[in-house]
Amino acid sequence: MADFSVCPICNLRVVTFELERHANSHFDDEDIDKDFELAQQIALDLACAPSSPPYIPVDDDMQCETSSRKDRESSFLKSEAKNCNPGGKDIDEKARILSSVHSNETQPQIGQGLMDLLKNCLELETEKTTTILCGNVDHFQSSHSEDFGWGCGWRNIQMLSSHLLKQRQEAREVLYGGSGFVPDIPSLQRWLEIAWKRGFDKQGSEDFDQAIYGKRNWIGTTECATLFRSFGLRARIVDFVSREIDIRSSEVGKCVGNMAPQVYGPMDRYLSKGKNVVSKAVPISYDVKAKPKVQQALIDWVWNYFADNKSRISGNHGILVSQKAPLYFQHDGHSRTIVGIQMKCQRNGPMQYNLLILDPGHTTESLAKSLKGNFGWQKLIKRGVHTLKKPLYQLCFLDPGIASGEEIESLKNLHSIRVEA
Image (cartoon, rainbow, N blue to C red; front, top):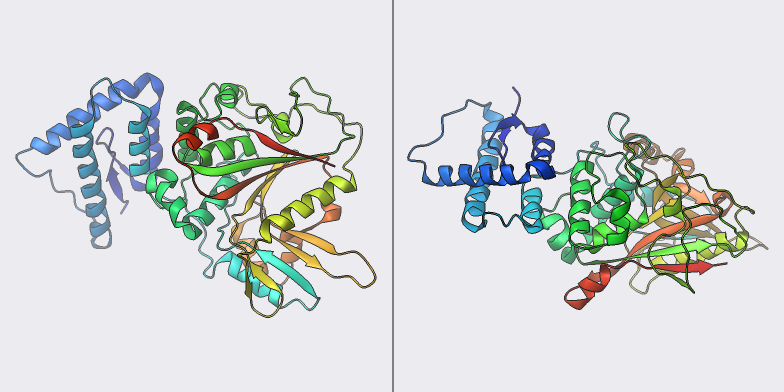
């Protein structure tokens, strides 16, 4: 028997797994006034109702969960009726409703955590290496039926969110209204719209007309940083660019000194952010290919980022667990998540480095299977310097702590750190 839940906006009974999408649909601008008035009236009716609602039979194994969900929704509605001012439907109302109705993104059940499986495989390697890994990170895969071909940016945001929710208590308290879950893509799109309406990355939001819910536009590090900054997280962006590269595109912005005045970094120039339903690559050409100096600058930066003084040794194989968050890794046409880096000593040669990457284009089950069997996982996760063939790269990273006061205002304006090599 299907599990039904009550929408806290219109009080309609819908299938539980469709609740989030149904509730999100109420945020359409042309219907928002009507929806809030209806929600308030329903809440008042519930608060003053002389009798209990009609009994709806449910399966025994679902009755407790459904009852608890309805209790929470009823309490939420009564609270909104008490505190909501007619005509004052500000963005905080949307955020409270969004955090109250969202559910966590569903994931394949793989048993042991993916990062633990990766650490086990690294400990079995026979070569002399030093590896630095993030703590817990869940893998989120692109779905052929939902976001394949355009959703990698959102999936990487989910991976970073999974780490922050598990590893940083201060982030867990502020992210997504303190709900404690990783939202699905439609909810993340709503949270980004809320960030824009609160004034974060105003210039970038204009590329989307401040509306991205339900669209298939590609996003990049700018949107990732904007979303996390709106919760007070200190998200930063760094560009890696060759001094010899000449980018030919009508969308290239002018960078001043070592800082871009607004984050229209290299990767953002590949993204068509207009009103198109499905994003298309912006035509860009270069006069040179990626230079070894750019590759090495990226590798050095990633190593120094993870190799902080708070890293702790795990096991006896030179594996350190960093306190740093994963990195959103953007390049032409795709984005992935860097969860660590490995350095291998070579006899009579320079150090060899491998980035350790989780790709939303891979399935979680295939990653888990290869790690559990210790076979083939290297091709899925390890990326050597020789694979860095793009001329431009961009990272989004998160400094520790939560901003407040004047710092929150400063976070609304995005700047990128420009590393030229």
